[in-house]
Image (cartoon, rainbow over all chains, first blue to last red; front, side, top):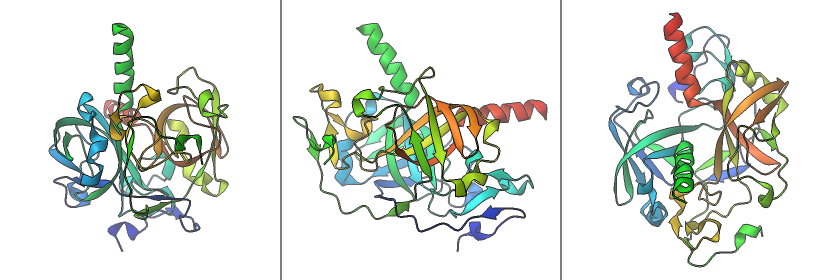
Length: 160
Length: 160
């Protein structure tokens, strides 16, 4: 069992039916210098280390045009999380909070989201800054960050 | 088959093995006034209509403390999307782009993300503004939006 299997005082869980409503296929893997949870920063930072987002080579054509944006939203699967916590005590603070009022990795569907800066592309690999997840984290999705889109639209309106 | 089953000229697909790397459990459902794709705005707007985010009542305790934030990130399953598009032509523009360089709902793992404004909570229901998805869209996750967290940290530092 992962180290997350231990409950902190007061934390509550719920018994849920098996997760079987939809299925994911991992599209790649994230490489970071963070080998353990203790290594991970609390939140990715613009001046954090370079990380590599490795896309399954079969999906490389789906990256066409990604260089047009420098802010990319990543979705990834926090595969070492427990999924049954209703309330939790962030970093053992003693304070109890509902799971959905926190960005904790422990949640019914343990999906992390980050907005990162694209430094460069090397074939099916994106080199980025701004991640806080463990090395080897499975990738689910990537797309231009929202605000970037708004900027592009403003730009388009300006040029039109 | 959904209306999304038709390919536009030049669009390319890939044959993928079944999606079986991880399983999702829907945690609720999103109610919007948008009954068809044509009704959906291109992007949610701060002055858009009120929408209801209905959480499975068994998970209601996980909402504790959600009122502390007014900007919430929602993740939802775009269940009418095809998942095999490598390149696509946004709104039939003729221009071809890689799927990952677009926020299109058609993607290998069709997960949409939005940041919405929380207007009020009614038990297991959150009333929000800023959505653009179809009525009945399955909900996967909700959490405080990232920038809000940064704001809270600055606040905490200020008070500390």
